Length: 284
Image (cartoon, rainbow, N blue to C red; front, side):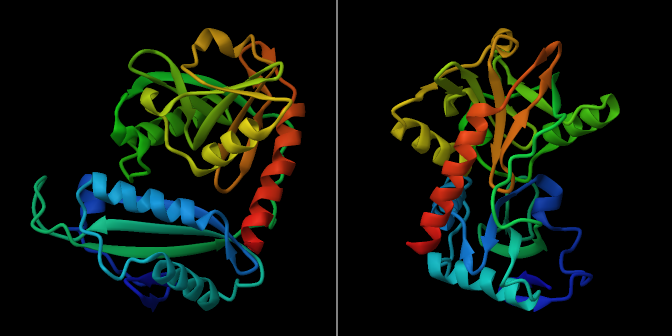
């Protein structure tokens, strides 16, 4: 079942028209998060990121769009799909309503909630072959729009096709200054000794929720040092570890970049702490 503006429909129901602004102009935002045994992981962080993004895109936030209302609608959708006792991937998409060309005729919005079953309730570290390469055909802009989780993902789609065609598990994206900012579907962390580095938002990376949580974990650690700074492509082969983060996988180690192979000891230690933080959020 799919939730469209609070009403449940079968998955195969045609809900959107050819005038949908998300389809026509990428005029939409989305949040992807984990639901596990009745709890939405880091829901407040997702909610406030969505609200801030809607304001930046000058969407009109409905009075009903409270933290509690959207959580209830997500729970209703999960229950309708009989998945409330397991692990579920939730996607909440918000788009400006039909009308207009580039200039909309309204700033009012609609939403769609979709769910799908996940294999594990915990973040699991997937070791093994995970080779990446730089994608340099197109660049990430260094601006606030690049920080938002919009549906305007042409660069990510083309990079995914490039990865498929060349046998890579993922690609690393670079900005207009040729600095490495993120992967196709997550933020990048670079490990050198006890220092863990990730690109700043000013470089154009996504303002990721797991990025934020991992930065909190690293900052609180006595054994690790967090550095938020630009990442040069020349640093990658000198690193001890490289790993990616997103809200569904948690942490994904990179095993190989060009001629360099990487371990994942730091990533292993961090995924346990990330699971602990998620469990703490469940009980709070």
